[in-house]
Image (cartoon, rainbow, N blue to C red):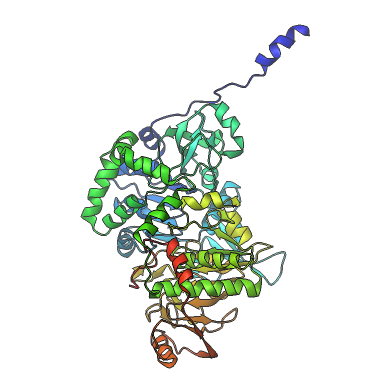
Length: 595
């Protein structure tokens, strides 16, 4: 046996490169593996596979492939697929623009109104649960979300309400498994066999890849050795046997960013806000969007040409902006130009009122976490967190795609901005945040969401005015309102938004107990109780309280009752207003016109 000893190291050596070679070009990846009529899942971790999405558009532009497209969010750049007539059906939680403020997108509006594409609405937790059920080869999975919403009615074939077999008298929702034909994902690196590294937060996770009948089309920043993969095996989320092909697309998530949490060899890049605003403007007019598509999608036939069009300076800026401390230079620059010292405008008054109310609710009811949607609700949560920390509270802030226990950085009001990630105490995924920490066995969560409309019972509509207007959809709002111990809603007050009854229930009002507008605060008990005016947000003028109340009632679509004694909330102090403006120094949310 002695002759084996010198051979042991060689005999059991690990090969530097292992497995079948599945590397191909982006054009080959889409051309070989995507066929007309397919059900395609476009994955959403923190980044998006936009390199593959644009390649899909190039390959099928001018045709009628009648795809069913599944994605967590159809935001601005995804409008290319709908504008190009590639989608007969879109399944998602959000249809609209997300940056700088959430709102309807004309491309989706037109397709929805004309019937050119069908739109199927889910929430940010229930859509991944459908993919998870398929990945586990189950018929479906239970959830607390959607019950009592219009989504439950509209999706009756794929969502059922049943009695919990282990807790008689309690209702459960059950979502049906969703099997894509093929999935698209973008990760950091993979070996030639497709074993791939992804960094947190993980967003919806990887169930779409695991459930796809024809496998995963994977793009990555770089092809590496299997040795490199083994070094970071704890970050491998997609094993090679699930991968149909792998293609190298540097900055393949752009205009989304990509976080390098855990892989120091790779350089992160941040979301390209300028690009997102450019496509948002283009979507307003078909010819402008045609020109934008030609410039950024059809004309650059390769990723190298696309990156050349972006330019080295822009790419360098995005990489620098992903640095954890880049916020400091940005806020100093803004401060040097002077942050406004004017009195609070209506939007700021609303956010300040909501923040102070949230802080009071956390203290009085013992909540341990806060989770907010985008926009004013998010800024209110960030400011409430600052107030509570100053008072010694250890309440934690969460964001739906996988942020837990973060300390919001100033200078950038976008909820998922890169500067917040390094402050997180945990980076996870939607299922952990929304399914376990918002609505789980140990949950003590206060939610905060925005709304398009609200009614006297607290029901929220952020999806559609049927027959008239497509808004944006649930996103995580339904999951927050269904799972949190209590939810607060933040929205500007207008008679067209405060209704007797909303025409579409995105989020049932059972656990929505507080509404804060730019004029006042409205409260109710749990269940089907009626919202009442409990407080007036004072301005700097000397207008009489009775006059204010009449103004609030005039902007309300029902006979609004006033609870006595009515509270007069004084204007916030200058320091608190300054702190709020530090979170949004460009006024992207705080100076948004009410209309």
